[in-house]
Image (cartoon, rainbow, N blue to C red; front, side):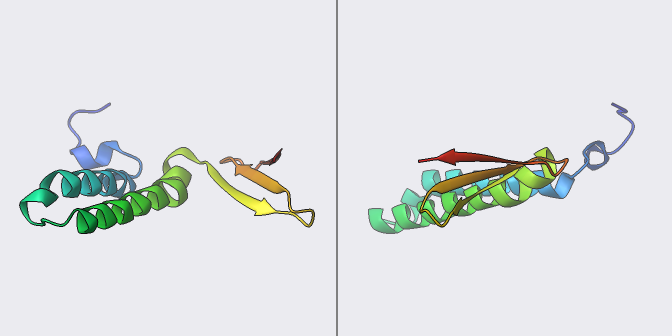
Length: 99
């Protein structure tokens, strides 16, 4: 690691890392600081769950694919069975059947 380079140039995907941490920090910060601004537990709960869902979506679909090279999803076949598909960076797809 070359210390003479600016901090942002040491990472392969600095924007992806920033948004990966941003969504986690946003949910946590809102949950901790929300009692200062809102008295309603329902509003705090709903917004925190929405921020957690956005964080999950970003980690699963964006930073998981770009930073680690992994992707996964679930499909239902004609028999009604659940098929989990996992995709690696080298585009090899493995199928695992789970009931």
